[in-house]
Structures are given as structure tokens and as C-alpha cells.
Length: 339
Image (cartoon, rainbow, N blue to C red; front, side):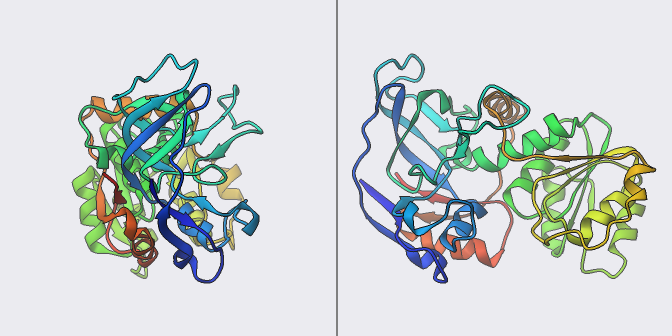
């Protein structure tokens, strides 16, 4: 088969990816092989190429990157009672979450490192990590969901406990998780507000269901957001930095802040009384469990939601696709077309 393999980690980043021949996987006991039609990129993939992700070390190479994929089952191993050959499926990349749904277990890891991932024509995965592709989605749309939409679902629904009529703020609209948050929150009846450095991205967020947004390049953006949204029930944050303090400021008493990232780095100044006097809940989250993955897919099918596709590239152009992601242009997921 053809695959995009990472051979070097370092300053070259995506330049370490090579499109080449690789062995076609064979299913073992309890496993299936999927002929992939589409894969999707995540920031994780880019971080791995620079060695900026846990486990991304030279001794982990060579490896096929990619956590997100959709295709059809081409072979099944022994003791597989689920998907059959020819079934159209999407892969849950949260491997071996464990029995405690509150927290991932010691064997948990994400597809695409150390196991070979979805930048390939075929992939081998445990059969219980394969789910029917939502009927309302193409393979490209289904491939856009797994890692980012699972992260968004757990943050918003399981940890954030979003309710219809509540006000939700999603800072930094543009990336995959943020767009999924807007779509899901709006579908569940919340009032959604966003921030971005791009007015164009704010307008796109409105198309996805956001009620409004503010440009954080404005000198008084935090005051504008507070005036626009009013007291906020739930903020779902991947930015950190100074933004986190703003989210605490605009939160209503007994509000919630769910955090799953810190792209702006540590919080430089947080006035702690905002947390304890307002009795705020600050909740961490990362990825999600198998039941949450199934519920996320069901939500997208039930509400006929379509993930936002930013750009599409051929599999052999995976390095260019990662460069496009680094540039931060556009909104939504970047897709690799495979077959």
C-alpha cells in the first residue's frame, strides 16, 4: 500500500514526511483492516513532526501519522463479531480508554503514535474502535470528526453539562474543535458566542449557529464580549494565557469553564477571588471514551450536522497539508483524499 511515513523529527517538521510503499496490514485476533477513503489532520500531527508531543522521539520512528479516518472494512480477524467486510465505518482514535469513564486508563493512547495511523491506504485497528459511518455524511465529512469532535463533545456535554438556553463562549474560533463546539452547542439549544482575530471567521461561526462574536484584536474586546453575551454559563477554552482570566471575569456566578488546551501558554495573572467568590467550576478534559464517541456520532446524524471542511489534499501531499495547517488560514478541518 501507499502511506505517508514520518522518518525524521526535528526542525524540518512536515519535511520529515515521505510518501512511499509500506506493508499492507493484516488483521489479528479482534482486529479489522479498513481501506481508507479519507483522513483528516490535527494539530497533534504537526506537533509530532517537530518532536513537540509526548512520545515523539526518534526511537518511535518510522511511524504513519494520522488519528482520523473513514472508509470500509476490507478484512476481519478472528473473534470479530461487529463490523463485516464492506461496512462503511469511521475510526475512534481514542485507543484503550479503560473501564473508568471519568478518566483514561494507563493503557490509553491516541491512534497515529505509537501505532500507525490514517495517513495510508489501509489501517489495522481493534474492531471495537470501529463505528458505522453516519448516513448523512460523506467519507470526507466523517473523517473530519473523530479526534476533534470527540474532544468537543466531552468538553461541552459530559464535562460542561450544557443545557438548552444557556450562554456558551468559544474563544478562538477557527480550528476543528472550536467549530464542532459551535455546531453542537447551537444544535443543543445554547446561545453561542465566539472570539477570533478574523471577522471572516466570526461570520462563518454565525453560519454554524453562533449568535455573535468579537474580534480579539480590538482594544476592548473583553468588554465587547461581556456586553454582547451577558453573563456566561459555560466557556470552553483551548487558549489559556490572558484569555482565561477574561473568561473568569465574564462568567456568571456558579458558571463553568472547561479547558482542553493552552495555545497561548500559562495564565500569567489570574485573580483567584473570581474563582472562589463566584463559586466557578473549572474543569479539565481531553479526548473522550467510547460511549461518548458513539453519542457524538449520533448527535451529528440526528441533527444532520455537517463538519466544516477547510481544504482537501491528496494523500501524497500530506506535508503540504500540514504546512497549510501551520499557516492557520481558513476555518474547519483539513482532509486527505485517499481513494
